[in-house]
Image (tube, rainbow, N blue to C red; front, side, top):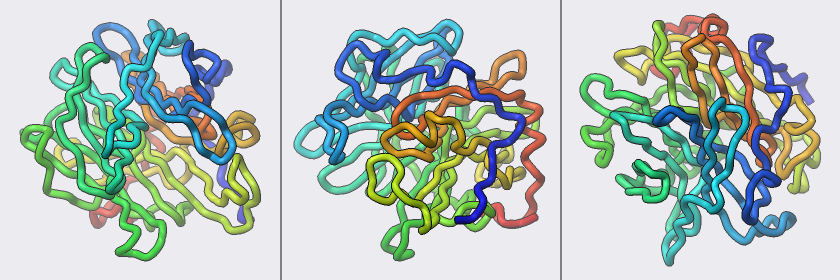
Length: 334
């Protein structure tokens, strides 16, 4: 197996990780991970994925979305019941939320498994008990994240279409789309291809919703490499993938254009709760990023598809990691 690149020295894991796990949830919970996190109306808000039931086949009883609040972004109070569980004759489950505050309302991007394919959705809520679904993609698309303001008069999102059949293999890239009203989406453009990341050979996609900096839109991405020599990790007989968190910088006025790229992992699986314990180990999946007034950036991520964790860095250090990019929209220039 090839040597695996380590995490960047500018990133610091919270010593008390995980910040949320199944034992913190006051209703049936087994795997608590891949949360969306934002600041809304003066406090931190987290909506997390909860897979509950027996761990083994893996056939769980179901999936719902839980809700937690915090005053400091570290200590979380989980609400007494799930905030959303959508299941009917067509919808199997909703999961992997991403939160963006836009025009004073909280928008939730999510993945939804249906009887006719995997779709991505955008919903809006003001009280975290009622969710209005604004749009759903056709199959197969997921990992949607919204920008927190209009750009050029239009709403913008990043997404990851699942181009399995057109390529004949598991390899996905990051695209952008825009909308006049958050309901109808078009103008799809390639943002970043797998070939732009030296340590990626499988797929990549959006992570947490972008944050605005003086240099551009800073956003995390998930990056996957596959090594056939990897053995058993987690529940699968041979889990051959490793998920890392990466980082890119997008143009403030044209967010489909990559202007900076970190070509090494921002956060690679290294801690015991990322590599030794968990449902699917060697997995880091960033889902929330908050830029504080002090310049500290809080990055929330799912670890081993089992728990929710926190890492921090200073925004200036993160921007310094993003080496300038020239060339095409896929970020392959140097």
